[in-house]
Image (cartoon, rainbow, N blue to C red; front, side, top):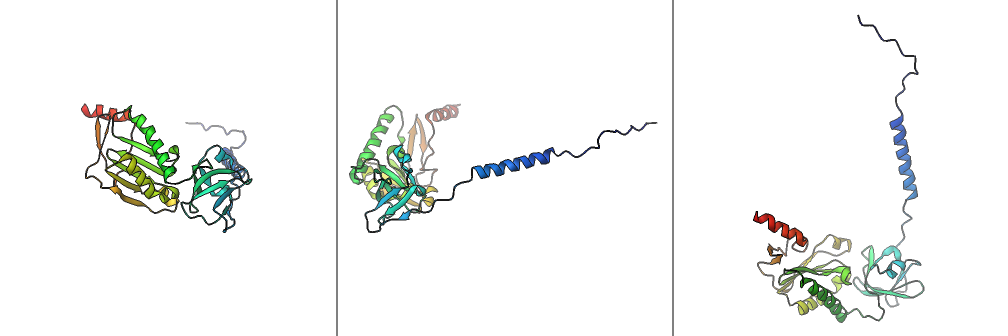
Length: 272
């Protein structure tokens, strides 16, 4: 016969509060972090300056530091007021509260990035000659790089990296694919296409401005042939491997770029 165990005289068991206490601590921590890191009150839109004056962007006090470090974007919250009535894509001078020149930038009131810098030099004039110099410099750099690789495909212009915010150009054999991702680049579409045609002499310049970023810029998608005629078959060669490129509907600008070593690996695997 089994004997029952004697009852313990210890303190009656109480359900653990550890989980509950832990949840309270976590909740308290979240609230503390929320209070500590809560964003400051949203800065209003830039004030409207003198509409009769020439277009000008004046930054809030202290907000010029990022430009002085050569960051090419000017967010709406950094702007104190805007003189004149600049239109989307117009080139406008940017100054600090003391009136010191900071940059020439492309204006877009429809974007949180209200202006994108074209040049840091006050003496520059942003015109066709300006863009020809910028594009020539970018091409010169790529020609040096292409001399050390085998292939006929390369990104020849890469936006801010080449001092051309919003402009991406990929080369696939004799075809250039151009993407415009900012109001400034959009404003100069025809000029940019003419310069690329002159300097690169491609069979075709095809625009693939259909990225999601354009919507945030207040720009509709825009795709199609800008210069020349699109060949029925576009092919790019990379490290001895041939890739067909769907310029009009392919991923990104027609072909997702891949590192050279990955291409060689694909070649090795395909032979096995």
